[in-house]
Length: 218
Length: 218
DNA sequence: TCTATTTATGAAGGATCGTTCAGTTTTGGA
DNA sequence: TCCAAAACTGAACGATCCTTCATAAATAGA
Image (cartoon, rainbow over all chains, first blue to last red):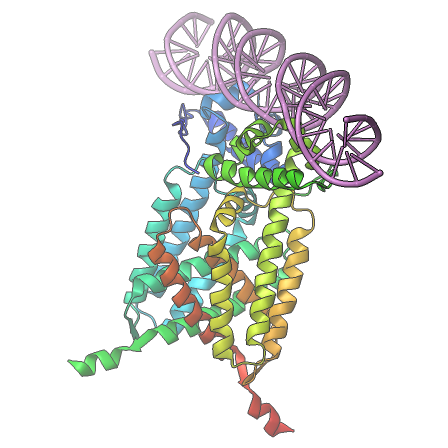
């Protein structure tokens, strides 16, 4: 799945005037919409430009090639997600595992349902292209954040916090996929959130040793 | 994400001779390989035909268009997965929730890691195209199977088995994605399996009421 | 107001790719 | 052995699409 030919994915030129920034925003929004309507197949430079209300040439001033559109979208999306996770970890740092589970699951699904458009569009596209090292980079960041959160738990200590964090991440992302599927009813989303919170709490409890047991051993 | 133009996805002609069946098999295998190497971008009719050792014309005798390749691949994959789930449910029907959790998670991840090639290829492609009603169709089947399994549990009864089955499915598919990612170490896969089994067992236990409580109420 | 810089335009080039079909080869059965 | 049906071939066509570039418009600062 590795891209053999190295391609330029970064912006060719930074917008300096306000209208230029508006243009860039419009292009990214248009990319999302075109993607949602017709998937990767219908994502053509002409169509995106038309939808954004600009000419193709304008697009190529800021995005050196078509893939750069997806790359920019993916990066913005992952930055936002990572920020949401980091903020959530901050919020419940040092709390009990019950609170940690509820908070993390809740905040994560909130973030995903807030930009459901982008999530849907990107999920459908798949992660085959334009990913560069984004997946790894943000994956590691999220892993570290959640792991740190687990280690800060007030009432429990984990033998292998890394493995627990990894399993939690896998579960969260999978659920997010299911919840943002185009045909998912709102019922599904709300129910899933509740179920996932219970699942995470039960899992953490099953995986934890109580703190006082550790203290007693000293 | 809906395909507006209806397209023919079924085989145009059924292979009658043995060599024709071999050709079809070779084409499907070639599709997987090309997909793994270069993603959807590199999946061209010429490339697949060349890799399969046949001419493009031959391909078009069995697959009315390019999308039909993906459709066939996806269907075979989902049929196999659904069969594995059904078989697993059969195996642990009427067992305790602990056994049910361990069996279901284990069998599911076994199935996914067995055809890891196809899983990787299809995950990367995304589910945007050629899906028809396959996702819904097999989704419903799997949901029904797991729900039935839960209702058969020896030592517990669930208030909302549908919701529990749904949450389990979301978790399983998400974990499968994480475990079949091209950069996943084997360590990840084995560790994930164990963690997921613990998670599922803990979740079912948290969601269950004991059977004898129900019996006592009568 | 004037001008250098930034931004926007869109027709045209060049390349790739999906699909067809007229013709050839192979197969299975009589 | 012979032939009708099945299977296979691959050059050619038509359509789409990405990308470039010469040119024009808009902007900000002097």
